[in-house]
Length: 420
Ligand SMILES: Cc1ncc(COP(=O)(O)O)c(C=O)c1O
Picture 1 (cartoon, rainbow, N blue to C red):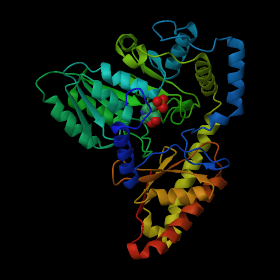
Picture 2: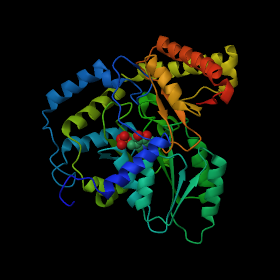
Picture 3: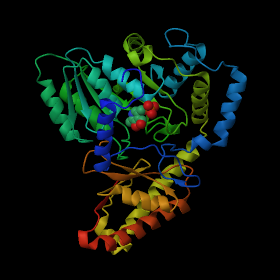
């Protein structure tokens, strides 16, 4: 068997696990985007990946900077450059932070931070819906305990922190939250979180870490994110901004103090043992920040918020006018701040297929990506979407809920809950 391509017991085991997923309807497959579909799915929130202004700035940046292509190595060896260092300083200044450290991805940044910054005996308290990359970092961490709190519940955070405050050792306590949660689209009550941490732990023990992956470019003046929108720069220990979503690039930056930056350079393995971002990637990051700083994305941001409000109101209307939809949809009373809508229902793949067949790209999100029982269709709006497109979406949702109710009457109607 050794050295041949013959199928052995490992292959049989992997096949069996894949079949189990197929049976549970949780099998993942790569899919190719269908040309011409309306994008209600990607994280390209500002539609910058096809923005001609950004393309122009980027091409000019490539021309004028005369950069090589590859970075040539790890940041600690040959991969570093004045270009990367000045980019870090500029981005940190834009977000009102002392320092910044670039990473190849947001995943690496979270995994790197949480695996090495909490010290032996420390505690990490995290929102139960934080990204998988935080979990991977925590798995490698030397923290004595990792404790979840109920998603976006300040009361539960207070309960957990009050228990941690009673621990005999005066350990550091890290609190991991996201500004916008990627699968639910809701925004963290950050001001209350900051107050709760101060009230329960007192001065100098609580270290709040905010993942701004989904709010970069979307929230705050010129897209600076939630922390800047709330003026909480001084209260937050570290912030993660990623470039792969609204900024149409890839990579990420962790913002914090100079000491934190230097510590990560010394201890974060996903930073030390990897080839650094290529120069075209850095040039794209610089170009998108140029656009942000020049106010070029503000109209896009405004249009996105307008569409969000429009979809919210249209869904409320849908709730009012269709008896069938009224029995299936549960619409919240306040307009969401983020462009991500989660329509929770038992068989999200049926609705996703229905919308895809009508030319709209949406995706079903199932367990284990989201907790069992909270399967949903994730609808994401973009600056490039039009009001007409959103109307088409709402019309299709209404038709589906009516058809589905009729079709499913014998089995009981599909339960659909829009969570905003
Ligand atoms: C909340 C959150 N944090 C971090 C990441 C990872 O960022 P990246 O895509 O740059 O690896 C993601 C990406 O899906 C995310 O949604």
